[in-house]
Length: 336
Image (spheres, helix red, strand yellow):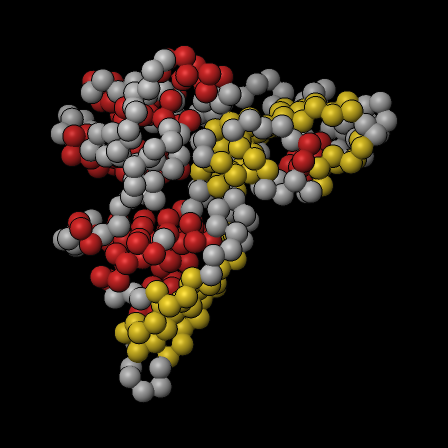
């Protein structure tokens, strides 16, 4: 983090204090020009609340239940209450889409610790889900997605659901609150900015701050002529080599959600099969392709960013041996 923040100093920000905690941190910068504290604080607050990715339940399938207003045999809560409690479970991981399941026999109190998931983990295992009576079996499956912002249940056109699945409104933001204060100096005409960031634990406040600041600077610097050597890279992952291969690298390009047919056609023309092939090429290479414009590039970068990836990455060992079989194993554990 310190190496990253040293690049930010070129824009007039100086690190004063950075408290590294899983849920709460304070970031303080000093000696900003008068009026810049509020300007920067407001911008960062909006980016933090609107763009940092997190997990949310997209739809739930409960055995023996056809709609959210139904009762579940042997369960104290109805389907709607169970789903509301499931949406309070916080997940942490890197894969963009996956499944989590519950298969438990009562009598018992069901909590987040009873959820089975292979490639992500539960941050709050003590969170209550429901109470199950003796002899009854509760079986359900959650489809999870990692994204940013809000996606409503009535807009699921591009999302395949099984018969009987219950769609959910998805609120992805892992930021619980962002507050800031500006402290004016009495004599020299400068001021300090202090930001207090609280997350749900699926991402640390420092990671969220770094992600948001990188995105903001990238957007501001697109047409400002900044020296590339003084700007942070587009992703925390791309700032270094990826020595451990992420499961997302093994996903096929054609299985990525929300990617247009035109974009897929361009990527296939370049010989891209897996995400690992894609992230090694540069923006310039993509932009040289006919019918591949800036809008397509931005959507692709947004999708890769939600997976913890970017373009023009250095990935030693890619492609690995037995690529097809490894990709198939990972695919079998995902919802893509």
